[in-house]
Image: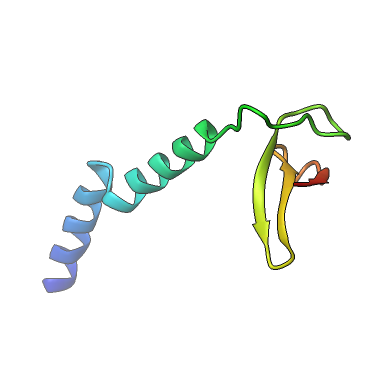
Amino acid sequence: MLKSQIEAQGDAFLKSGGFSERLTGKRVEAREQQRDADAPECPLCGKGMRRRKSAKGDFWGCSGYPECKGTRPA
């Protein structure tokens, strides 16, 4: 009985657009809006680039990653 109640609540939560699903959507939306005005074009595909961080420092990475692996130093 408890298992069926938990499943029913879980289904109702997901149907109403569960919190984590909405949060993921907002995060994706924010990342899409994260465009630098001074961002260069990718040397391989021509798409805009995004500033990225790595252990070796900042760099520009293609917004088309993982299809395009174009990078430039920051």
